[in-house]
Image (cartoon, rainbow, N blue to C red; front, top):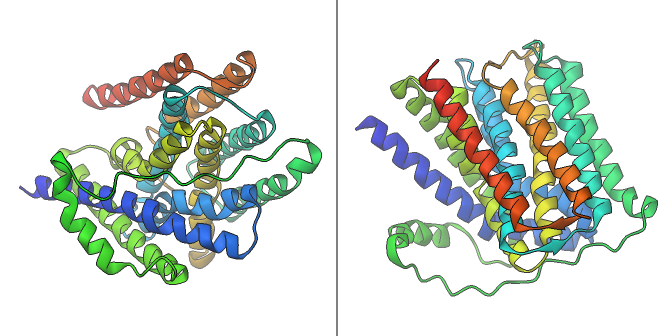
Length: 351
């Protein structure tokens, strides 16, 4: 019965995080970006990245500060989310609609993503994270932001257009979705009108932080009851749940024929997750406690190796296909992720 309670809590938290991120948080960030007159690329690399990656960031922070050495949940969630983004989200975007990519920004994001994965491996290989190592991760993200600002001057290309509004069929819930009507009603009462976007931003932050606390507590509970390592739960269940906002937005964009945006969203979120989602919490905790952080890195290095292999595969596939997205690539990427999940399950069962 307790296990059922934890699972229900996970499902409710996943749904609410997806709804808050998609309907309120990202929308408020879009208003803020317009108010600050930020370029589309800069807004995407900063505010939009924060919006889509906020769940992973909060999970990493909460898992790190929670007593009992649960830092592996944060690391596993971000690594697992990165795998889901690069394989499933990019794969789904390729299946939904064929698209020709603007290669310059995609190359930039894949390059920095590759550097991020290599940096993560080097930081985790000895099982201890120092102040210098966490600072390097955060500093690398600063370099990425500079590249975003300067890239169009270095490589002449046309910036991707703004995402157009997609008309929805209304808020009517059908079939099994009716069970979420009370949660939708709660959100409508909790959040202010769209014009109060600053208040919406603050309420979203608080709500996502609370829901991520629920995720961490529930994941630990499931791990203890089923005797499954916390990092396995994080690499699979929690990682997929926190990636739902990215999945929704990327599929919508891909349906509009803007596959390049879908790829940039997935890869850009991964860069933020690794460099800020892990680097910043480590930097803050190490600076506050004046001691190194030592997360449990068991079962992680195979996943990091798959991350590295996936970005190399995607890069050469794009080059060979002249920067075009197609269904065959999409099916291969999704199959690769399904194989990875099966591998993790089998490895646990026969450990």
